[in-house]
Image (tube, rainbow, N blue to C red; front, side):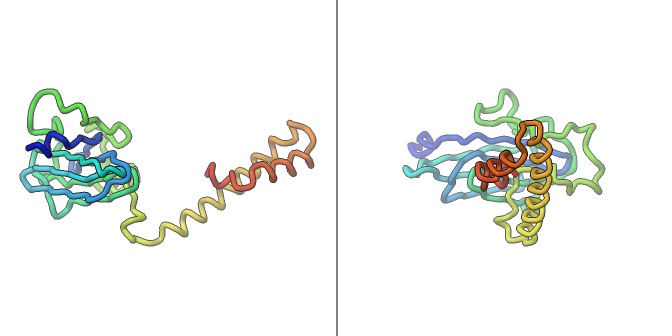
Length: 192
């Protein structure tokens, strides 16, 4: 029991659609990540973080049953994202089985939240809004690197055009272009 009292709770953000839960645990540099998800809705997470290997833990009972086999996890540098498939396609009135005020570490993820009456038809559930913060680069799915490079190249061209349009108003076109190229060197990539 002593170890449980010493464990801290990371911030846990959640959102839902009719068939999925999105659970994001904010814990930078998480190590020794363990997840246990049971069909009855038992959700257990533990990990350590920092040089001191401080233990963190989340042990909650979800509102209803889940499909463990269809649920997925992605461990990133700053957070751990879980896509939990509900056993039944229906909206939950809350995340936890327990009624009353939720724990302080549990927050709604408004970036992923979709109101029940605004949910898209089932044929469109694969949109990027459903997977906003998931880091798929760790899943070895391929194809992502080439796409990013192409997009970055297009952004640079657009930035260069807009920079050239602004420079004449500042006066001294040749000087502005030369100083712009020297001052920003690698910065256009940082803005993209």
